[in-house]
Amino acid sequence: MEEKQDQMIYPVGVDDLLICMMVEQDTSTGAPKYDLKVWRLPVVVKLGIKGNGSVKAKYASNKMFARVGRQTEHELSLDYVAIPVALFDVMQGITHNEGVSFSTTNVKEMPTFALGFIGPLSDGSQGCTWYPRVQLSNAEELEFETTSEEIEIKDLKLTMTASGLRNNSVLYSQFNPLRDSIKNLTLEKYISTVVYDEEVVAELTKP
View (cartoon, rainbow, N blue to C red):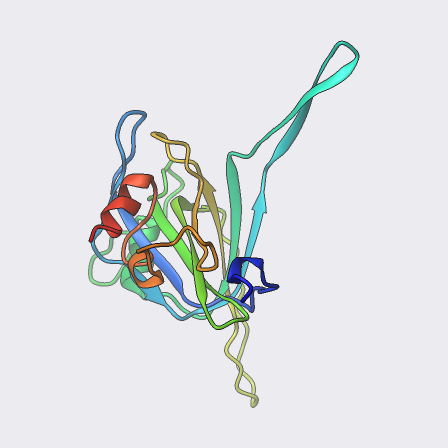
């Protein structure tokens, strides 16, 4: 029987969104630390991913010696239904009193969080991608529209930037259930915590 990794199996949409706040920033020598709670939200309408990759060619002896490429960021655009206000406030770095918050023109660094999404495949299995370092764009774009006789829930939109971790340059990790190297890792284990390096994988796959 043909191995699954050799079959023509394809993505069929997008499933739940995963968000986990970073509670301790990564450094050039230290890994990040994340909140124990991973929010799993069934709210995704559309998720767009745009990389900033560039390619350079190096020539020697009148021939192309090498072609190298690099990407340092992904722009993530999310159309969604709703995000719990308790989580969204933390993602924006908002504090409030008596339910009132204030937005100022002062310089501000947005909080950092990990963002993941589950992707269903045509054979019924599911994969997942984790971006371990993500920040919301502080350029707001809002649109409000009156209701009419026809009930319609409008999509909300977010723009985020995913960048590589400082300690290991990881931009994202990806679990694909079709790969034949899988021995112990499952989707449930992979989405239970932010997977940002091999040590996390080793911890998740301990007997």
